[in-house]
Length: 159
Image (cartoon, rainbow, N blue to C red; front, side, top):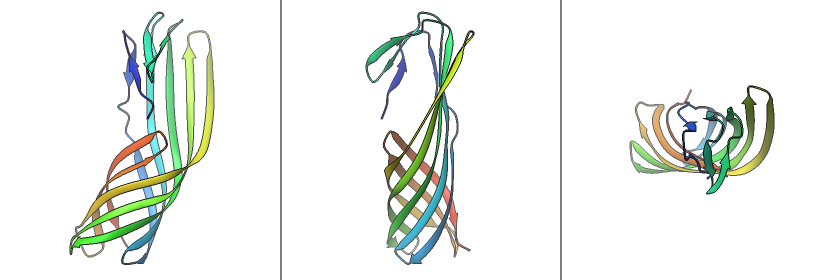
């Protein structure tokens, strides 16, 4: 995980929301295949000339007033394995691939630039789901890949 922290008056905003949409197919009682789109939202770091910030313990300094914005999204396919703990609660594990895209935008009063990167990483997750109807579940899951770690809480329904 990349750690960014302002060390003076620079401002780090990581309060954006994110969302995940998924579509899956239950193969049998213990295994499903899920396809997902995940929008990770955006984070920004703003500073004025002289402000200092750290990225993974390395120090950097704004040489001009500016803002750095990072955003990303991904498409994923994964196998989801479930194990019934009680008739209404199941544990789950996930393994799959995440095809991600990230964008970095830097802007100052004089110039702007952007950079994109993408890749494919192993996706993994662990969680619990509770039945709330004959075909519906509430799911809480830790999910991660490369530099992204998330705690998802969602509603799943089968048609």
